[in-house]
Length: 51
Image (cartoon, rainbow, N blue to C red; front, side, top):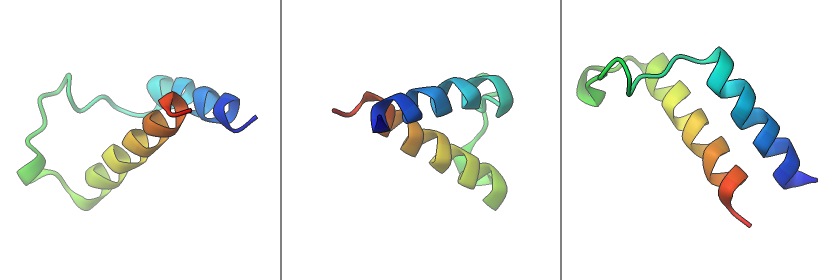
């Protein structure tokens, strides 16, 4: 159940949230909101893959 939820969230993130790696965002210059989005996507991806 938990893994299915995170896989669904990961798919939703991919469609809705921006991809900063494609934009080649410099993490040193990222705003707090951009860092929060990066953290959220990392956490969701980690939990979707972890089992």
